[in-house]
Amino acid sequence: MYKNLTIAFALTMLLTAGVAAQRNIEQAIDHDPLLEADAKLNLDVAWQAFGPARRAYKQVLLRFEETLAAYPEFSKMDEFLYLAGMSSYYLSRNEGRQKVDLTIARERERYNPEKLREDAEAYLTMMLERNPDSRYRTNAERVLKELKDAHPPGS
Image (cartoon, helix red, strand yellow):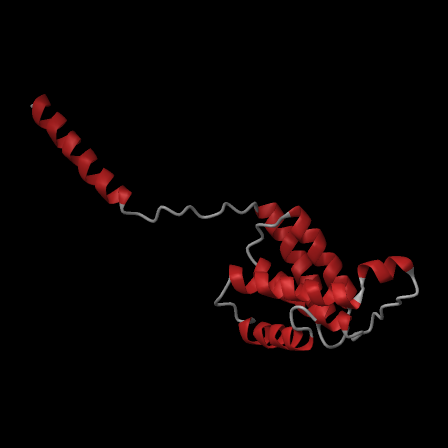
């Protein structure tokens, strides 16, 4: 009797081991619930700042940089990359309600139009690489094309 139980147990282990081996070997990233909640709050505030009523692009970039530094694994980082890319793009054109004053050294260093265009390109490219099926893809590709057409490599 014990011999049959041992054989049955061994067979069960062999069969379940084969099934377990067929599972997806990619592990999901464990997201910290507190960091997720904080990053989500920053994202919500950034969306409000980005919206047509406020167009506070400097604030969007500050929220993005804070979140990226604290929690780069944020589950909605593609949205943040999109907001940061578009905010950098708009600021490079001196659009929005928060104007860039290039006579102030700190502003000139941080919001130099060429640097902002490079940042916009980097953020939007990263967004597309990380999430090629993003719902922001079409707009991101349009802006990237515009940036590349306006400043071709080697110009």
